[in-house]
Image (cartoon, rainbow, N blue to C red; front, side, top):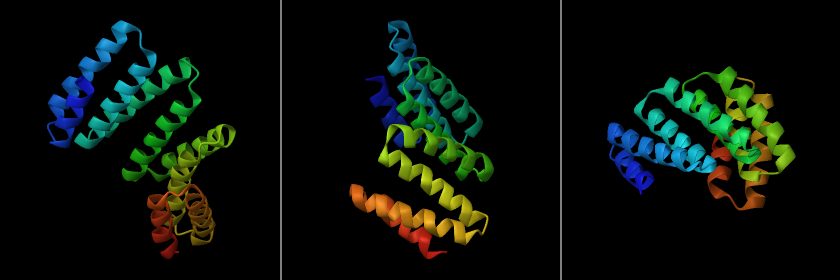
Amino acid sequence: VYRSLANIYKSQNDFEKAIEMSTHAYELRKQLGDKRGIVSSLLELGLIYEAKGETKTALQKLRLADSVARNINDRVTSAELEQVSAEILFNERNYEEAYARATRVLKTVSEITNQKLFIRASLIRGKYFLEQKKYFLALPVFEDIIAKAEQSGNLIYQIDAVQNAATC
């Protein structure tokens, strides 16, 4: 219930109420010992703080969520949290750190075979190369994304990759 309310408040840009609701959900899950729920609540808090423009706090919440995910040995969630962090850092123009995190995600994803996460991390790497004006490195990344997105039927990522490849 709290999470649903938090999402409603977030969509209305009432970030204080969204944070309040997500914090209630977090505290409740903590009392119940629900580790996966704790991770979910911390992720939600991180996304709210990002939407609010508080990147540093958002990344702190994601780091805490990652710590819990690693504690319960949830590699997929940990990689997803790392990817969200990479996307936030990229949007903040911290390209080097975003690239490093996306690279770590790709290493993990190659071990756990998560196609969607692979595509998302590859997009960060390709966009990093575009920002560095290394078009010869960006183009093969986007071509690979286009092929993988087509195989998995993911039109959104396919379009994103095509648009970025066109700038090469």
